[in-house]
Image (cartoon, rainbow over all chains, first blue to last red):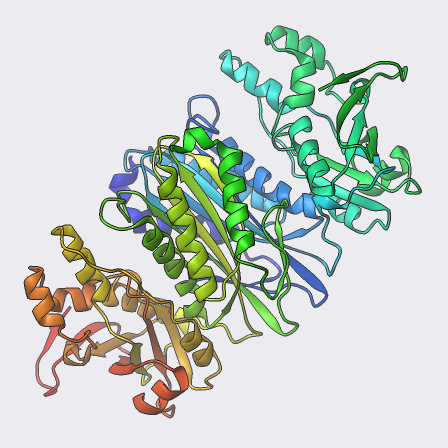
Length: 314
Length: 314
């Protein structure tokens, strides 16, 4: 069955029923189905809001990846912005654009992926929009709440701060490289919501951003916003287990994927010198954490080897 | 110049600068440029959130209407959902999708229209997203605040309620009909934000929806959500001045545009029998208001002539 057989209101009905089956959520006064959703943040919270879009053939392909995985991944990407602010999700708005020729199974898959992610990450789907377009696209707007005045910013880094990243880098870029060669691969990034919330409670936190465009690009954004520079030790960048070998099998350069691969949605952040070390930090944040460098007063990004001698510009 | 000459980050920069020139806004702790915006609602407010999209060739055409008007109109449509909930705007997220071949003047025009509307309606642009796609599309997510527990709903109508509509119906449908014939016409609907906020303070308010798809369609949504029916007097539907003559010149049926024309963004609402009459109401809401019918326990929508005799099913 194609979307044109279902019609716009048929599709909306279908989505609303699927979302309702997923059940009510705390903090949602009024969910999907009215002119707007009604949410209730806590009394001493600021609101955090962000929007993100994925478009067929630009960000995903139905012949590379199950629709469900695409929906879930789109939600992970959107929620990652809340994680990078230290916020807890309050609600998600999903705007779907699709051609009338779209297989309804694909639309259903996207919605199922969204609903699964919503449940997993405690981020209720509270509204949306459906429209016709030539490309299938999913624009997700996420709303969250953070303790008043504690939102994490890109602009909070100072010279002397230590630089950290959660988890590992390069897994998503490797999966994309494998898909590009027709190999099976799984893309299931996790937004670091709990880690972000824990970070926002740390007195010693400096700046924070999520790694969506790749380490070098996103670190660049953080440094620009803070008006500082950084030295990074490439040898300390955390790679997934067996990464170099898997890259070779996929014909990819592991170094490039580590520093430039996007969509890992790890948190890249700085702590003041007196803050906890990587091990204590990992316990507080509930995720592996690697210290990869330091913030400098001199602008720009330098790579420094473990020996301290020599450096490479990324 | 085309978008491909500017690049994604060039376009983002351009938008951020235009938005920053428009100045800071109250309630916005952190605007455009970080991973997410930070907003601060009042202590006794609920949040209201909605998303809406317009797509080239589906909802607008650059050869029919200036880009600025398209941007402004898209924002009016999105904010109308806040109006229908009785909310004041806190912030707007704008996700733009566009082909690399798009004339930068068109992108600039869309953004200018958004910024003008944001200023006019006190709805600060606080974030967004830019992506490549074959169609130009603008997905706007709006966040607002309403006094706690006072959000207006579609589901609040009861048998015996009187049925009202603000302003006039049919003007947007007439403008579209004229554009379709190559005539010059202006499409500049206003979201009824102040009226919606005043309505949310009325103890006698029942249900509320905005007229985006046309009176019959949106009244249908309200009746369905409330589990009731209505009788409407077609002779009482408020038309713009000179409407019938202008419709004839455009080759359009005035009756059809009145009952089925969309995008007027007027508020359609019910009041309990003891509430104020149309004149007192107009003074409270600050807009013209017409009483057009009543809510009935019997489901369905009937049209009743002024004489009371005979009725037509819409």
